[in-house]
Image 1 (tube, one colour):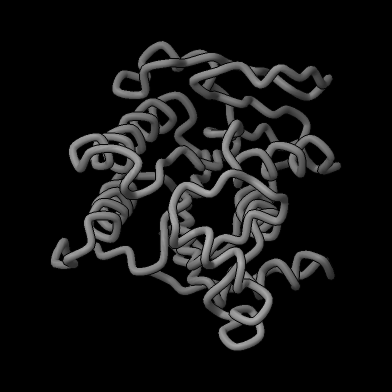
Image 2 (cartoon, rainbow, N blue to C red; image 1 turned 135 degrees about the vertical axis):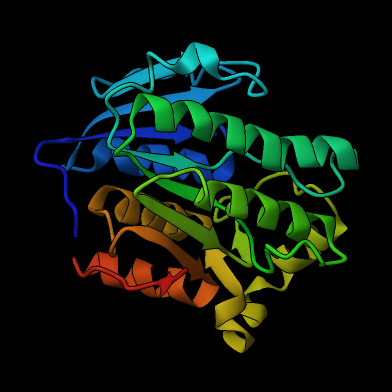
Length: 240
């Protein structure tokens, strides 16, 4: 493991979202994290001695973030949008362009930083998938792997259980939430709690798992990390 010598300086993108929100709360309470820079399109509305809340509205151009991203040890990128909530062009822009642009500035400002990316189950780096979500997540993964980071962590959750009640984005999510208890029992490796996913992303990012290069964590791996993290043990993941 490549643990920073001092308290970890962690960036979280998308902390106003479900997974990013849990990541933020977990990171602020984590004893190994000394500073959290949360970057989002709206303010968090909270204060904490560890927190630097940075407002950035246009992720198509992250040049203005160069100073805020300087001297960071790791980043957890949770910015995203639900399929069907926006047009196909907007989905690709948010999923691919925003991720790659942010990574560009982070890499130039903090070349030794680790990067944890919230991808999705079925992400296809070949671009042949019929599902736009899978193609775009795969395209983003491929670009991030080529960005030059010493450590890239790709998290591919299946169904993310919200934990707390919320307004579900569509019928499929409402159905999955309704049948979650049975679905979890029958298909445990096809579900992950949002808070478990967030903790896994933060823990892996700040510990610096594995040798240099990329690691991909499928839903089964993420569940294992959540269990291992609760016992203070590192997880392996699959080398890319």
